[in-house]
Length: 89
Image (cartoon, rainbow, N blue to C red; front, side, top):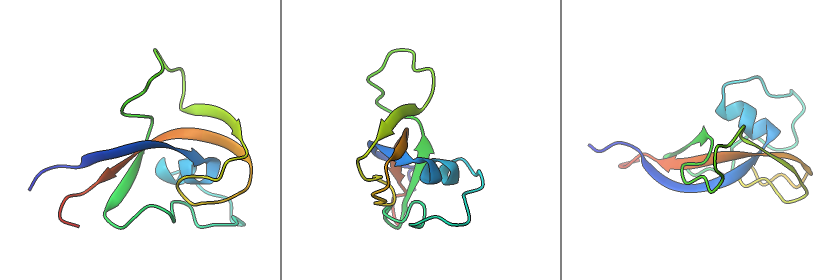
């Protein structure tokens, strides 16, 4: 069986980014972190195809756009993440 396959780079809200990194998420979140990620996919910090040279962090700044990982429409900080799939799931 082959290893994980990179799917795409995207952005995540702070709650999803914390969930990706195993950090505690607030008890009162509006949407379940990473709920828009399909079964058989997983997310890692940072971008695989990072267009920036020498990135200092995964923090991309503030955005009013929905989170790509949970679809939350709350504005807030966004972070770089990569979505991968596990073949056969």
